[in-house]
Length: 349
Image 1 (tube, rainbow, N blue to C red):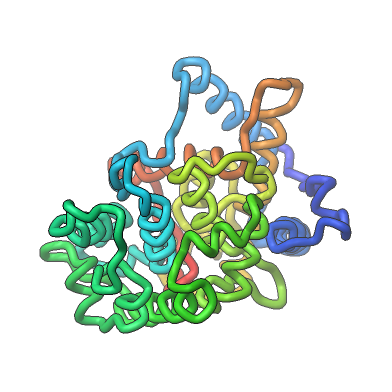
Image 2 (image 1 turned 180 degrees about the vertical axis):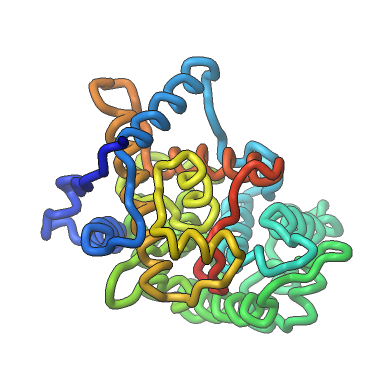
């Protein structure tokens, strides 16, 4: 029989001098997981997964890269406005990076990323003679986001023959992003990044402080999936140096727990498992949802700790483990090899 897992939060998470939103996510998820009984973690299967990742790492020099599928926007290196364009693309992307499963015709993350990339490319296609300028008329600009309509969102993000779930909510969140950038950051996403002063944690804090749509927390625990993934995307796409990425947690969504359950790392109470396998929706911000997401954060922390154990050269973080597990989960799900994921209609993931 597999031994059950006893979570040990990283020591930094208990240091009151370093309190920040990432630590609040880590602390609260470890605490909530230890107090619930709907989801358990098998320590033996955690170790099996660690071994599998290590074996893959031996075979490949780099297990996963951020833009491995080449879905994301990357303007020419010589553009003086390149950082701004990438920063705004990612902020707009992760503001609406949630809830793809309700779509009966499978509107997926790749549709979102690729179509937004196409919109960003179209913005400057007619201005190649002045590549170092920005225009408020660009589809991807703070001004246009602030004045976005659902019809325009559909035009920008729509994939042929596919329905965009929660279209009005995506429009509302783009309106919020544009308005906040105009009011507090001179319309510039890069200004927001510079205000973080080279700190991934401070960048997360700024997103939570200024953008209500990123406030993925409640009285029991915090997760901040989209705020943290936005910062992770910024760091990877912009090659930001010396950001304290190790302080971020995993991005608790539905794909990671789906994969972790398949590997028997996460084990659900029979009633919860039955609901998920029957494709029944789980109410947003209910104990079952919190238990699944908290357990996901705890598992990834354990994976990072074990992957880096007794290896001074190993530099796994929750972010890099997340990328690996997410891409593996996407592949196996596309191949029909995973059981269903939990279904929550939410704007947080």
